[in-house]
Length: 267
Image (cartoon, rainbow, N blue to C red; front, side, top):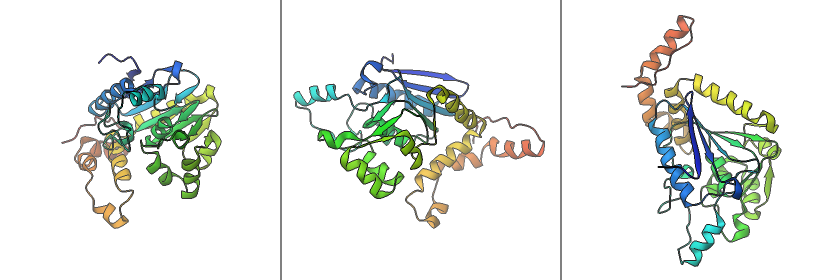
């Protein structure tokens, strides 16, 4: 596919995915969702990629979510309004309901992360924000719902009353508040944002890739399980890790007092 809405770059085991419509605050139309779906497929398939950075082009927004002008045109054409998830829509499954993505995704957030943009942030594993970042789910003010996971993820990631306050009013949250509630990992000045993100991706790349994938899968799949069931559940990436060359290499490198050389190969 020739990408017109997203920039996709790979370097040193890190993929950078940039939503690239800065003139409309990186609003996501159907074309962007289609491009992103192909990119997420490639991220998962390419074992050389160990981490992903998701960000928005320009200096005003991560993304403001759904392209409402396109949505209005679809409404005028008589298209049925969507509900939870991306089933039957362009780009399915989108990152917000792509539950099998095993690579860690780092959100680099500057400016507005509203609606579907905030929902993307909530679906990422690590979030680094500039001091100017603004988060919010304004759907209730538009007769819509946060159907890309905001209704479900926000009450899981915030205290219930706090989450309901934001969901039911559409109020915005600044970066300092997001940090206080644990929705982001770090908040830094804009001129330090890229360096901070690089610090996190460097740490992810140095880690054993199969361990990262196994830990991500086990942590997320077990969230709603009783602790006893979590210990006995099946985690395919953990089965691959424990049968891998890397499981032996890490211990050997430690005893030989050298840096491990990860292959990511498994039987």
